[in-house]
Image (tube, rainbow, N blue to C red; front, side):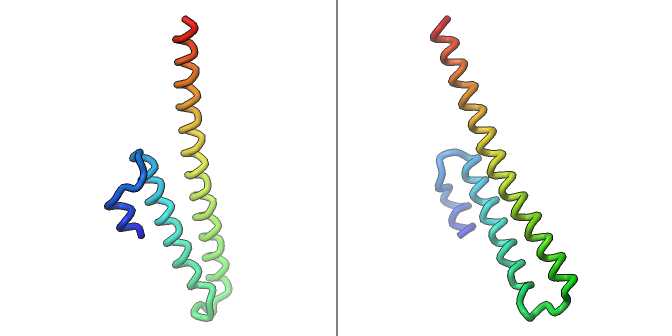
Length: 89
């Protein structure tokens, strides 16, 4: 799916396409972490470290997505304020 998304650019903006690829990479990393919770990994301390790594990756993914929303909202708000100022002037 990452290859198709990388070649086709399904979104209009470059940032949205990049964010989609980043989210796909995070999902891929989390999927690889899930294998460590099977009987394949008998060491309990290693499972704890893998769980902490999963939490870190998930929080990082959420922060990047929320940060993108905040930046886009701030940019649109500034544009709207500028247009209102120019219309008032």
